[in-house]
Amino acid sequence: MSEATTGSDGDDIVTVNFKLTESFLEEIDDTWQGRGFNSRSEFIRYTLRDAVEFPTFDRDELVALLEAEEDVREGRTMSADEARDRFGTDE
Image (cartoon, rainbow, N blue to C red; front, side):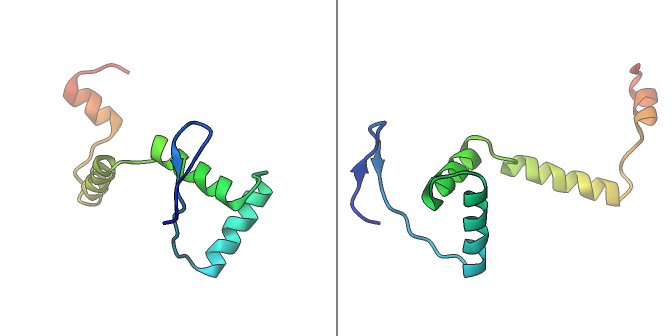
């Protein structure tokens, strides 16, 4: 990482380097330019911030999905009608 500078909100801004394939970089470039971002860095910062603030799934949710998928494969599920009958609920 390089030296830190101070951003407009007072937080230090640091440079982070990472590796990716050239073809993926081309996809990133096509995406940020097509969506109106001013730079690749702005797009990557926005995307990372969005992923941190609004994660699609956390680990526990992914584990629950995998367990549910296994239940379906193993036939350990029931229809909505069967659940209503079993638990005595109304529609």
